[in-house]
Image (cartoon, rainbow, N blue to C red; front, side, top):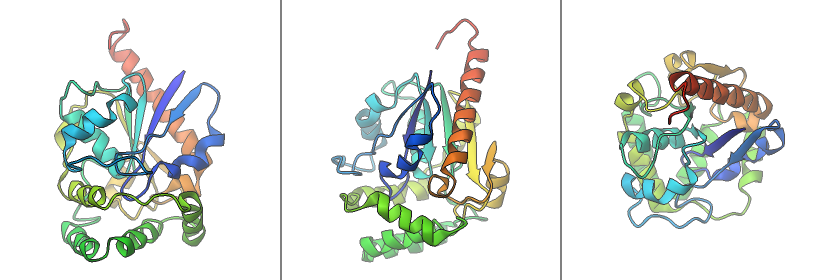
Length: 250
């Protein structure tokens, strides 16, 4: 049995994973928890507190699963592991999808560009979130169709908490998981769309698997291929973990 936990990114709640639901093969179980402040889940009193976040989500990030973190969700998953907290035990594997050790990069989204975006968010959070959702879909083969699918998925549900979104932008600016991912506490694999506009070229090309014809949101444009890659990468993580612990020790 392969168990996956799918973690969504900035400005998007767990409904983004729904296109994958009918595609999982037998023997794979999947959960898609929302982060605090998303999907109607109560926000943290201090949304930028990683230790508080670890305590809040601990029951939904079990050690017997492979965690799949998309975009900011991947940055947060790696950062929580890097805390070295006893609240969260390392999982059987971590798949980082559409992200790397950090968000900003001189050849991708720069710190200066993110600072401009954060100022725009401070002025008008709703308009800026709408702009971001359109912008992140530029790499899909049919971005307008992908945007309509995204709107259909999100529907009239509760919007993300504004303070949580602001904290997420600060995490995008500041989180650096390079040290943790250089010596990770579990097997780590990277997955990218070949046209992801949020990733620099070297990170796209350096991914363990790439999805042709997809950008930052392959769950909207190439869900069948995404499922195939996630299952294969998860099994690679499990095999790597088993090889490192031949007697079955955690």
